Length: 233
Ligand code: ZN
Image (tube, rainbow, N blue to C red; front, side, top):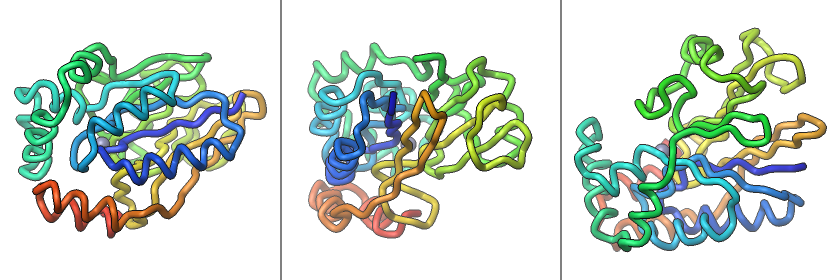
């Protein structure tokens, strides 16, 4: 079975629509969303609707959590805080209830999925360095844990060196971000995985980023949030 793993959409409808169009063309059978559907961008309700229509499993992200409970954004930077408050005002009540029912990690088809990290997933730790990854390897039981949160795609193997995914070793795989990549490449990012052949691929694609950026400005959200998606930082 071929699955797609999408994460960190951040209310970017243009990037989400383009990703789903690509996924359709790839013969994908199931889509897992690792959370942070909302926060930063201009279309929270539309993105949540589309994710619910198209994916089979959805995890909670820290921005989803903050958008429905503003007490949870104490550690947010000022831009994230403004976006969370704006999103909280925009989100329909039914959608808030849906978000409140989500969890930050899950095991599906013998694979682990977490928004931020398998170790204390509700604490929203970041896995950025090889050292972070090594500390997290014992925290999950499946051969692979897919995650997001840092918006930086990458593969970490328990042996610290392998980049190719093969059976018999444990991996942490960051699928990157659909709506706000931060690795210096503005193109949307998601992962595809074949549960039979064990083949993993990171997909990058251009999308109508100018439209998404201008919608952020028009919504009255911080200009910095409109600018950063053009840069991928
Ligand atoms: Zn995020």
